[in-house]
Image (spheres, rainbow, N blue to C red):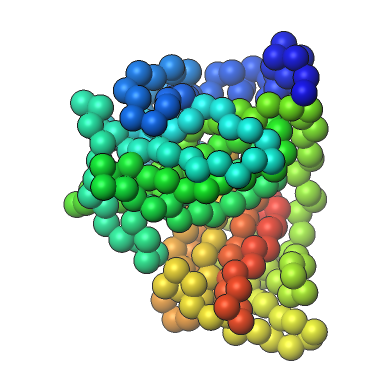
Amino acid sequence: MTRPAAYLTALLALFGLAYLAGGARVGVGEGARATAERGHGGADGAMAMGDAHDDASVPGLAVAERGLRLVAPATLRAGVREDVAFRIADDRGATVRDFDVEHTKKLHLIAVRRDLTGFQHLHPTQAADGSWRVPLTLRDPGAYRLLADFTPRGGQATTLGSDVLVGGDFAPRALPAPSAHASVDGYDVALAPSTGREATLRFAISRDGAAVTPEPYLGAAGHLVALREGDLAYLHVHPDANGKVAFGARFPSAGRYRLFLQFQHEGRVHTAAFTKVVS
């Protein structure tokens, strides 16, 4: 393992000043109230959406917004399966307990390294005290982002993000080149062409040249997570209601995005990843 100073130097070389200017990060033990903060996208996570009249918050950039805060570990160990505990706190520090069901779950947790590798979509279990637990293995060292996607009971859909550092020799990877095709577990997945910031993302799945109809997963034909390169802004996409592997998306800006499509076939969930350029 590298010395702390060398590890931090590697992180600075990767993320530069933009990383340091990112938003607040909270590191806590189980049940702890104290927080250590760094800014991540401003106090309320607000960010321009590409025109002067569209100032809606971009999900996933802030550790706290709308009176809610993600309280999660600040460090984990590489290659070790750990039982990770976290919670959603209100502006008084109390644990939020009640959530609406979205896509068949009360809360979705995304774990991904900041170079957009190591993607995991997890469904934690809620304890009696309102906190959440999930087994998590972060295989490689580096800086990761935990994104909690949820809707508080009677509230708005919210995505909060918190960084977690994993010590060790850190080798960042370049984002793969844009492509309309991906292969995973013997399946071929094709992404239909689309242009502009508002688009319908359509996928076709095949295996050995034959079309595959996926089984329902999280209440739809598939589940899609889209993350923007650089700050990992999280897009809320809406699945097609007619059983097609298609999603309505509104990209907050031009740039490169990593799309993670999850589909289920023969009882197993598969994840196909694409790099998409939005102009």
